[in-house]
Image (cartoon, rainbow, N blue to C red):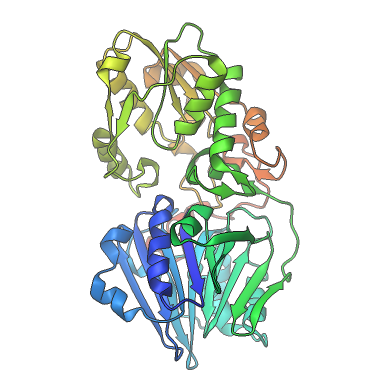
Length: 467
């Protein structure tokens, strides 16, 4: 997952974009970047590794002038975390420029790249997004949005795109609608963002969601919508509501906080913890689900784990060693709440099990009499090829152990997962139209022909995802 943000028609477009990226930091922490286009059509870029707060010095922001800007926070789904893979991409083509920010993962990127290289294309990165840049550069459409539509023909997988062609901003969302993308207004300016919380921070009013398969162009001639992509079944990512999106956002037409509370209530119905005295969340992404569990079960909700907010999201660290280190400094238990109690610890998901096992040990050490683990999603048993960093089944603990083995390995007294049907029933627009391949193993599209080649792009010279 990545975060994308763009502004058209505001004198402080780059500054607004920087603010928007702060609200999307949870979607990617490896690098951040902004491309700005000034009043005479000159495009400039600033990219850096690390957080948004670390990436843009005052002197760099000072040169990012103009009424157009797009930005990106990166979370790589595979491959190297390196500056050459930071976004937005900025390419110069025939006295013109193409800037692109991408959230998603292309499942046929290897094949597309090979075809381009066979035709003479030279790549400067290992990310799948650069494939789209080359295809846009070769497109022959007579309008910017027509060029983007042509470039996306035959592109498979998940994508939400922000593209700048000269002085036109184009957004596109894949026909399956895997990732969220919204449009808002700030006075006479148009703002695009991965989540509504990023519109809130700049004072923009949400206008509507960009529809699956839709391409929207904004320039001095106004706003144009194009439906040039082949229609496909709706497959929005259920994990956006389970974990990734911020609870103050509306995603896929519904409140993330409301859906997470519904997940927690359903979890309490399916997996009650009889005799438990305290419910608490693994903060912060599980807070709403734990509140829902407490509301439904009648067990008091407490703030029993305190999170160090100067440590990033453990799941989206690019390496396992990084995840291990972050877990050790990320949480601290409140002994006065836990000691001598039978507790329910609610988390949104268990991916690799690193965080969970460490947290159970912390809670035991704080004196918990019993620890009952409850998870507000189904077991993750399959790799995701649409933008989540679960590329190998061998890394997924629920795919490698039986339920009884998981209980012993995590060190809990009991473990309860939400069912797939229960999870889908909590979604804001009903249970249909969601991708749940990572929970069910049922993929809505053809999977990559060689997932390991896609994953190994930095070493093999083929593209890798940047989500």
